[in-house]
Length: 246
Image (cartoon, rainbow, N blue to C red; front, top):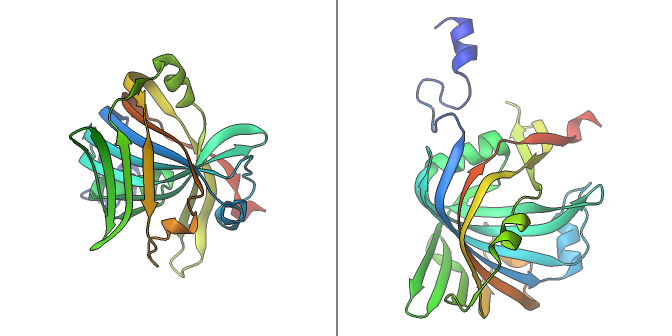
């Protein structure tokens, strides 16, 4: 294989059988269950990377069902997102993600810098309740429950809330283990179509695990629970801060 061909084909590992196709990456009937809760300010300060800041100590715990996504297949995801600011502009920082499919784990980490690890999340309707769970190995570490479709939300307002910047800390090590890439990445959701959105009473329980420390952002008060179904495109990112250039 000639050098020019290597360069042309190099977008994902392994070179001769990439783990996922080139984008764009379109998601159909993507289903969100998001529980917003209040935590301790000190807990957020401990894990939030500068130059990101926050106003209120809020965390959005998410269960996301993705039955039809370009190149990534059918999978479910769960994790924590923190409302933040960068240079005064509001956005969201993804702190932890766990999912059950290899291709989006590899693609999410390699392309964007999503903090993805292997887990076993689920999202389903049980009679009159929407139920999300996350297992890390045999251990149940998150359980969310919401009354199913209690109150319809304004779709235009929900769509607008999904169009802001989202931030990731992308880290790729050098062969000696030192960081070769260490960047704050901004990515956006594009071409968002909201098919339905509801709120309802919700609860969330988190359990401690040394390798999946989601409980390090403890629950002090449940603020809201929402359920959203949407089609959208996951846009590629841009670097907004290079930690190694300082």
